[in-house]
Image (cartoon, rainbow, N blue to C red; front, side, top):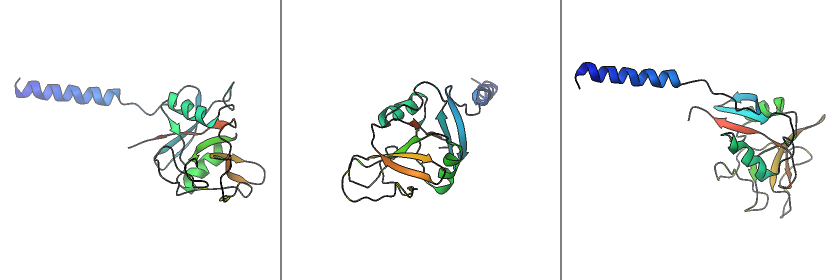
Length: 163
């Protein structure tokens, strides 16, 4: 292949790459909550079963659409979710290994940011059945609650971008 052929092949490859690149699309059955700090946050559209998932089912729901359960790592991320989530929803955080030490299933590391509600305030010393994290708002308080992993709620999912 001569220089012209190589140049044409490279140009064609670049064209294919650029023409097939598209903006990130929200998976059918989900709605956009917002974007911040390199993450897109989504929630299942209200419908049968959308508010009726255990923690494990919620993780599977996110994964089935190419997302993962949302790990809120800053006040800015928490604010985007709180401002737009209208339902009680699962987020990343579980304390099955060490009581009251919540870790991320996405990273395998302890959570470094938390936003416990006044009523769901942690830590509570000792083992209990409340091992998973739910985010919710009411008229008085927005924040995180530690709840039973078999309770049933919606889920906040995320898609990291630019990684």
